[in-house]
Length: 70
View 1 (cartoon, helix red, strand yellow):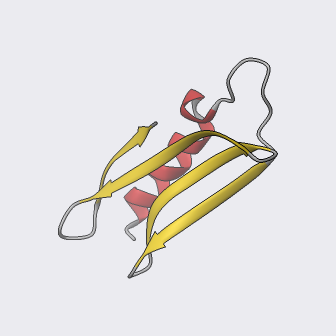
View 2 (tube, rainbow, N blue to C red):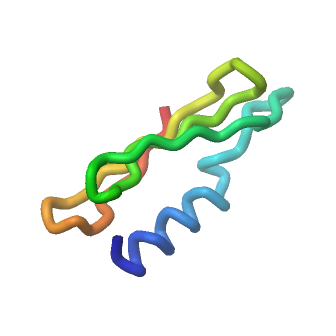
């Protein structure tokens, strides 16, 4: 992972992109990885309730492309 991708991921995690919905609290974070290792998703939970997922996209050369919250 390039230095730029790491900084982008860090910035995304610290932004409102990762804010819990009103009345909820993030108590658990689970990540999944593709071979490489390349970060694929980060799931945010309030106990066992999935609040949202960040899904990361990568360019063919391995550089960071985008992140989406679902």
